[in-house]
Length: 330
Ligand SMILES: [Zn+2]
Image (cartoon, rainbow, N blue to C red):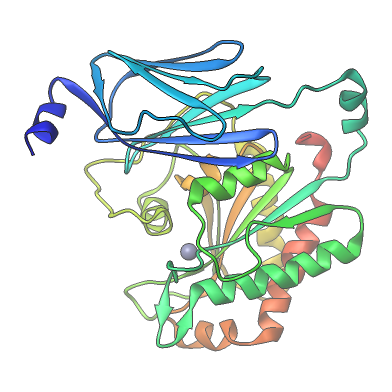
């Protein structure tokens, strides 16, 4: 208790450090006790975070692929090998500094060839494992999102023009930053996260489409709080600090295409707007989150249990991907 109280004033308390490793790509999530100013820099084989106060933590230890060294105000992560890029971004609740590092050394031939690669689509079925998402009776968001994602996966796979992956293909728990890290490591061009909505009012029904934006409405913040797994606090807006460009315009374009396909198939689109969604914030490619219906609405609930509706949604998203202009985003 004494340490926690002190940390608010004179120390930086690092609560947890997690890493996700996919091939040549590593993401490290540093969870802090509270928001704190810092300075980020990267060397040939390390990254360095300098705070304005001394750090206390029990998390400075040797990890499989890197060492964490803490001295005074400096947290240094040594990788022992050459880094080709290092970026960071911050998510606010809980306050985490997320560092992405790649070790891939691109040869000139790779760069030439990458112009001809098939667009990579990553489908992300929301929730999973210990996190059921929205629940009504024995109907669970995590099962509906997985079913829909599998239908979409099959359509894209059969098409042959794309490389397609899923963040999970079974009932398994994944952290939000793990999903986007996986997408980044696969060099995704389009990331589609599939979710099911819920609302206090039984009347709310229809689909909703979101892309990442730092500017958002109160409603988008409410949805994001739910999907980010945080309690809504209107006094503390969700503020991001991102060192990298995110593809807001391209993501909005894909959201428009999906909305048009939904309308064409007679499905109501309640909203299509920017939202502070963590899973999208951590993804460097065109990225959208689709809420395919409300589990709390009687008619939507019937649809969400019908294979033909899920197929219709999958076809609509697939059609939008086919119409999407990848040239602008690659
Ligand atoms: Zn969800």
